[in-house]
Image (tube, rainbow, N blue to C red; front, side, top):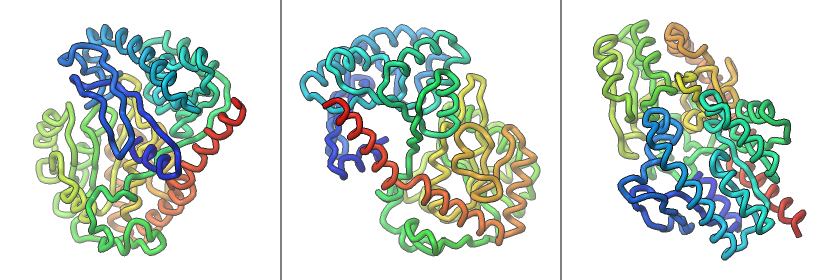
Length: 390
């Protein structure tokens, strides 16, 4: 989202962000954009957001539902106050439950068009709380436009309430070079922006890389199980990041595959760059978790492909928008450790095939996930709403 906003500003848009505070965090600026933080509880209790999604927090700590009431009331009031002062052309509400609901009073009172941006998690809440469906239908009926981060999310929106949905995925953050300034000398053959020259380089040890939060929907337990199917002399699985499940996953890996699985912990940008350079393929073994949550898109797959890594991922959520099986990567059934291991073995023994997957992924990214196209379509939508309003 930060990259999206930065690029909108580069194209001449004026953006202000209304977001909740975190443990008393005051309003501030990021990349020259003003972030208006609204307070909804004493600082020690402003923990509904950040670190992990609010739905996950509410599921594990039901008492936090009490925070949702002041969150929505204060957020709605601050939305009205900010729009009354600044008179924006459009309100763009990410995560329509609850933020779309919070924006509707301002939309109606001030006549400002409302754009809803679904990321998937809000729709999956319906499995646990049926009443959320009624709220979302109400919000969708009142919206002036609806965006979805993937085909998977768009289909769920239309099943909930028939409407026009525009696909608006995220691109990568590689253009702002989060890995430092040395990507131009990448061993994959070029910088991540000279796509036609990217080459897959086989290595003596086949290194499988995962990068992300250690939470249930990432399916890391099945990745560890896959390691038991692999020759420890030929394969290594490296798990980057941290999360609520890190300790239990490390214990599980020590029991199941102590020689094949390495946890790196949280890395610096330079260390992360080294991991990407050293890897043979990238994996996202996502699942639909016990709360019904899964990957809305999987932007990390796009970033890994940009860096010349063949992709292996589960056939869930919005992942197939990025990974077309046998064309831009390998899709495997969720929760299937044997299928994961077989995919790694296929790539390790057939570098020509791995190279074709890399090129296929780059072509798909160029067609669907470049920021130039994403931002242009977003601005066109805004301009259309502004024109109809005037």
